[in-house]
Image (cartoon, rainbow, N blue to C red):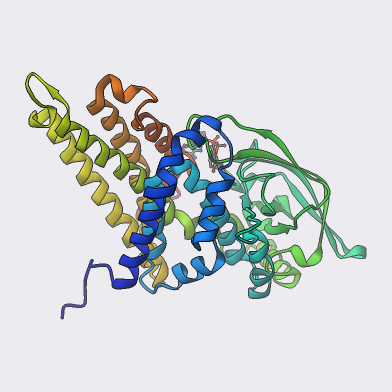
Length: 404
Ligand SMILES: Cc1cc2nc3c(=O)[nH]c(=O)nc-3n(C[C@H](O)[C@H](O)[C@H](O)COP(=O)(O)OP(=O)(O)OC[C@H]3O[C@@H](n4cnc5c(N)ncnc54)[C@H](O)[C@@H]3O)c2cc1C
């Protein structure tokens, strides 16, 4: 029996090369400019759309890979190019994931084209859960959705924060509380269609890294959406709420269902950043001479590079395992999705810091990209579940104890 293999197939290799070429030719050269501008790189997103990689078709193709590896491969290459630009593009994918995890096939078909727009007129999607007082603790969401039966409309009120593409997206998928006393089991996901009155952008944040990616507050003020915008439909929600009121188990909760599915791909983004920094510092260490020899000839530098490469490869393997498990329906018995995101995120922070060290003073300046990669990497221990929350998930899974 030799049916175990870590070799990528022809399709995967082809997509990997395609994204790598786009990242090298289009994304990487634009990275510094958009980081400095701290603006959404619309022309690059448009180019990605024209190229076919920012589209629903592309995602369908990627999601269809039975091994689950295509999306992590795409994420690694794109984020190798640049994380801020990569996230401007992938923010929409999170919105799509929110739709798929919570919506009916009809709802997915209706809203997906609105998320992407057309290559001539590209649009974005946003997925919003976090609130000022509900970050790691997503069970304590305060933003409310109240049903107005007479009009068959939902009335949304509250504030969301830290939303990638928030306020500039065409479609927002938002998780709100329907019955606050039920915690996360009383929540539901809604689509807010383009141009809906009552949804406005609050402050746009100025950030440490991934500065080309737009992050903002969203304010919902008597924002009315049709009943059909409740993802999964009213009947399913009523059944789920009834089960929760009786204290029975319910199917996955709206926010967690999305995050579980996207975690390995987020880990892959971190692998991309780490690899960029490793490759750059390896080349630099071979070129840079001090004491009449290349600095890589010193064990202190060469061993650093050896450790960087080892941790990056270990991260990728964890990501691939989690993606494969998710796709093939294997249960995450030990928090494998969280492991991949945790290890890849912390590796990216560590590797990019080593890269700055290898470049010395040059590494500390904006003349070289490694300081940007370091700033970009840091978000991977914070969003989509902080490192502490990933450890909590793993600890609970392996111990069976409700660790706090
Ligand atoms: C750039 C950026 C983009 C983002 N994009 C989105 C988005 O598109 N959509 C979205 O919904 N959200 C988004 N977020 C929000 C992100 O997911 C949250 O910031 C994250 O979940 C942490 O929440 P918090 O910031 O409120 O921190 P807190 O939850 O307040 O955590 C603060 C610290 O306490 C620790 N902590 C909290 N609880 C525990 C515990 N039980 N045990 C141990 N330690 C604990 C945390 O690990 C952390 O170190 C984004 C955030 C940023 C910064």
